[in-house]
Amino acid sequence: MSPNAPLVAVLNGPNLNLLGERQPEVYGRETLDDVRRLCLQTAQGAGLQVDFRQSNHEGEIVEAIHELRHRVGGMVINAAAYTHTSVAIRDAVAVVDAPVIEVHITNIHRREAFRGHSYLSDVVDGVIAGCGTQGYTLAISRIAGLLTRS
Ligand code: CA2
Image (cartoon, rainbow, N blue to C red; front, side, top):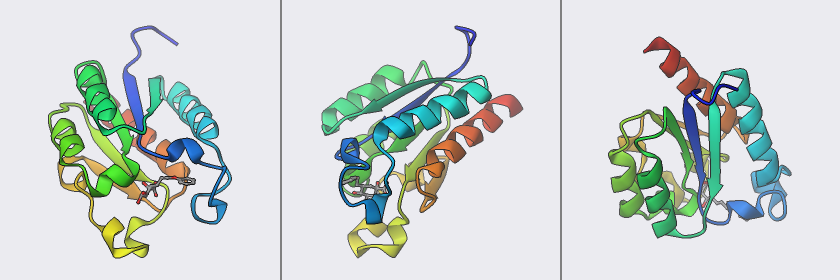
């Protein structure tokens, strides 16, 4: 992989570190490490580098977005529960110049009503929900497509 390959950040919000350990009937059996590997594999195939992170803290996610926003060719974000609550993460995402794709493992529109609203959806370039962990690979492929087109 060339050190000049465009970087894609994959940011994960609270409790996603528990993936595969609890509620497999909702979130499946894959762990966050499996998702990391999936993302690395997909990115490598598309000639992209990946910076994969998870945090349970809102401010840390905001700071990660600030740190990465000038360095990335694209961003994939599953803000987890902060999707439905965080104006701070929304405001940070809104100033990322590169394409941002919002991902949810589950179909948030088929769950509790409070999950149906996202503070991010109208400031990102694309939204993928309900495709399981494949949503992450779809998002990376989309970013790769946008980068080769430009
Ligand atoms: O479907 C998604 O990806 C979500 O972003 C996941 C969030 C949820 O709050 C959103 O409404 C939808 C929850 C992530 C927590 O994941 C867990 C995994 C296993 C056990 C417990 C939580």
